[in-house]
Image 1 (cartoon, rainbow, N blue to C red):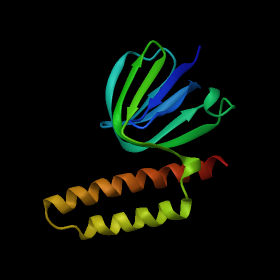
Image 2 (image 1 turned 90 degrees about the vertical axis):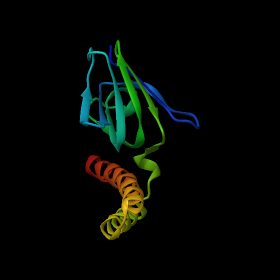
Image 3 (image 1 turned 30 degrees about the horizontal axis):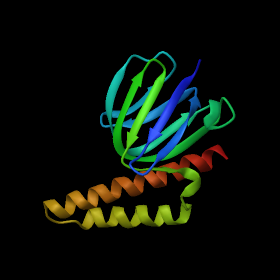
Length: 142
């Protein structure tokens, strides 16, 4: 039996299916989950989430990538439930726009002054970086 994965966003159920492995962007770093993983609840950071095999790709060795904009994940009895603030599939991201947004957000972060401006610029940078990373992963798998 593989992992049963459910990704839910406030707007709709984003994705539901089976996979062999998932890599989550947690607040303490990336966390890989395989079959029979110990039960855990973890906070998700803004970042790239990768899903390998099963229904996610049609091939055991193929990876699908998604940009996750924070949330929580529950791993229990080979079920992974992800409550995400927002999720975007790599196929739905324009690579050129993602690169431009990333470079612009990086420049804005470097120019930011004051606590509020730095916090807002950092959040925009993390979102743009997640979207850009997901597109780069997609290009590597093609």
